[in-house]
Image (tube, rainbow, N blue to C red):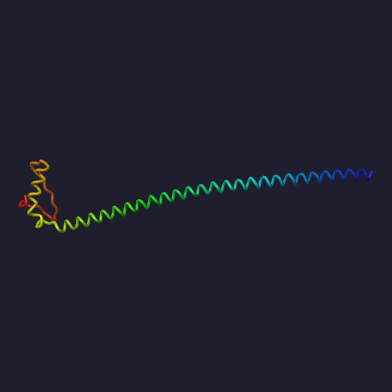
Length: 135
């Protein structure tokens, strides 16, 4: 009976050992599969993040180009305004009633005739006043 029990016990142990080996193999396969899935997911996440970063970088570059173009445009306009102001200052400093007084009446008459007006309203500045004598 001991041999039968021993063989039965041996069979149970062998079966348990085979079952344990099978469970270990299945666990290794599952772990390997899970590891590969995690690696693929991580690669996919990295690629998505890389694309998002590239898109943000493109947007930043576009904004930078737009800001640079705007700054250049503003600088150009500022330079034009400053040049215009310099010219106006020179004109105003050189033109006064004494300088152009002899010509004002003629210019006003030519403007009125050119505009086909019977009467003309004349505006003037304090730097170059127009008087009745000019008209």
